Amino acid sequence: MTSVFGRRSGMVRALAGAAAVAAMVASNITAAAAAEVPDIYDPSATIAEIAPEIARETTSPDSVDLTINNGSTGAIVSLSAPEAAAERRGAGEDVSGVASPELTFTAPYLVSEREKSGDISVWNTTSSAAAAYIQPMNGGVRILTAIADDSAPREYTYHLDVPAGTELRENDLGFMIWSAENDFLGQIHKPWARDSSGRDLDTHYEWNDGTLTQVVDLDVSGIDFPVLIDPAWTYGYSYDIALKSVAQTRNLLYSCFNCYFPVEGAPSWFPSPDEYLPLIVRAFPGAPFPLDFSCYFNNEQRTVYEGYTYFNYSFRASSTHVDGFGSWISFDFSPRDPSQAPAYAGTRLVVNAYIVNSNPPGGQWLYSEFARGNWATFANNIETG
Image (cartoon, rainbow, N blue to C red; front, side):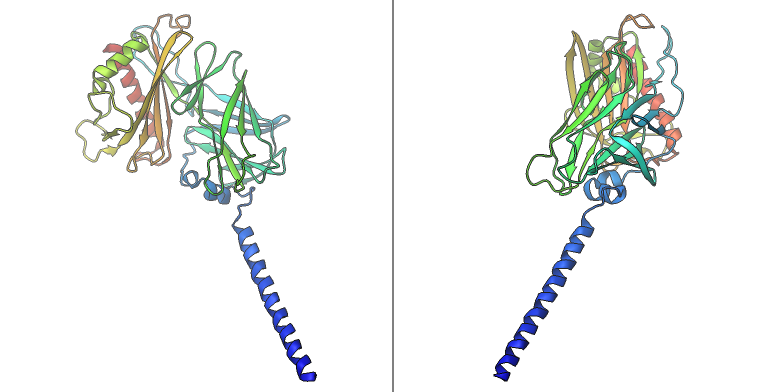
């Protein structure tokens, strides 16, 4: 009996030991899994996990003037070009770029700044299941919202301080902000939402008299939380082409693209979607060691709005482009409002760019100055063509 009891006791002890080991292993696995889930208040870990392309960006501190304040109605964010905008030219003067004006918006769901993490401002929100990161970009700002679970809100609202009648006009990269007086106020990038497994979720913007709301679908099955969503804003530059209509401008570019587009390597024909363009830029004609501006043509978008024709096209950077893979530039052509000074019909060219690499050869300031001058040349070429 004793020996039988002893064998049973040994079996019990063995089983107990195995259970303890199993429990310990399970506990370690659970702890490891928990450790792999990003803390929504840790922007570096969350962004690296869900949007590594953003984590690879570098931002020049002098590429945007950005202020963030904690107001009584939420975070107040203002962004503008670092240099003062030039006055619009008069008839007969050379085309010169005008920066879009300072853009200010309030995010009422951001209730208090929690901490700084590098150049990112981390905020508490009205929901314990969501945190927000305000991050400067080259030429703009984004607000990333990290959503911990499906108890979080589905809508995130921003009140823009813009004149009454301001509208959004869709382009290839998102939405341009235009005042009722036909002044370009900035670019809103396309909305996106992504879960931790890399799955893109349905999301869209709604616009109502200066209020922008991003709506995200958190009700589908299988979402791997946390989720990251991102509206972003950038400023741009506009150029008045006084003597050509939008239709005339488009016809010129279709007749001989590189006669007007002032970048070496541009084709004589108007590019086709996804066409590779071996563009290069030299410090001066014939200079050795040109900068690689190779890119792909996205597509042309042509729309009619309230009886007026608009068109735009954009390029996306190649893997060797000096701006970095993921960069893009957009050229939008719209009719001027003849009632606005200078009082003549024509075309307004708006150039928007998103730059991944903030450290180009020669430095950001020199690079930006060259780019603005180059697009002024582009506008002048069209005007005199």
